[in-house]
Length: 129
Image (tube, rainbow, N blue to C red):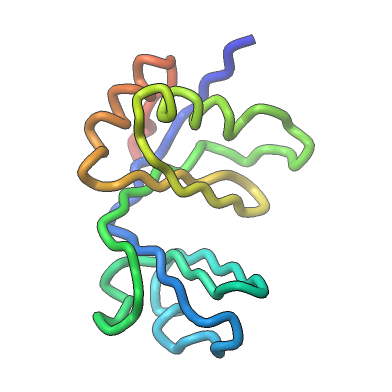
């Protein structure tokens, strides 16, 4: 069964930062209106608006974001796969993050038009905010 969803184009440009795993949460991280943080024994990663990340921080900048139109129950299967599959088939690298209600997919801004085309061809649509 093919699954298709509405997607929001999130404003702004995003960065993923890599810090030492023992580093305290930096003051600049919560300044962003949207952020994702993960801490493992190997690293502290922060995805947030690019403008919030100081130049001296190790980061990959220049990411665009799509938000899946949710909310989705946490036991729903195949939601993220339905969006990631057409992007993978188009050769587009992604970062994916999930919140309680929905999923977010980041693509490089240089791949944005190609990503939009692949998602539309897969049957997804863009929701006007």
